[in-house]
Image (tube, rainbow, N blue to C red; front, side, top):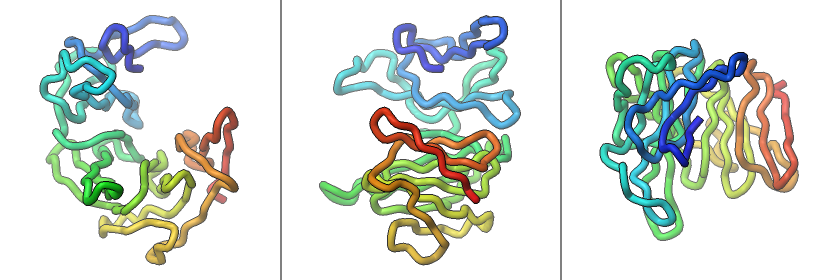
Length: 205
């Protein structure tokens, strides 16, 4: 997890309670996530600003570090947020945003090969606020204007546009009123979302 007080990314062994610091330098670290094999942790290093101090904000971007705390973190990309993995530990997904007007900020879901740094743009949305790739890499959940949706994620790598009116792929709205904070079950059979203090689960079946 990311410890705001210490400015570190820390791994805790749940059985023993032992903690390992993964980031040797202080910083503003966000969105830590394990690779499928548990050997690596991806996270975002941010500049800070607004309500947070700008100190220790050099070299922002998406990083990868060994989960055993050995070795130095390496930056995968300067531009990206919300890192996540699918089924392949050699591929990392990040979200990129590009403001096109005062109200619109289209987002892209980009897949990065960790060995070659080859990038593939997979999904584009004009209004989505978040993407959630299933652990098996077959499904994509996304949030748009406070509603949650589910659609298949094709392996072809062809850029796919998603949205409530998109017709390229079948999709399903999951919530009745609203939903946010998408996250998957470990077996990819359920997508969870929250509304206020309530948690909802929807089966991919």
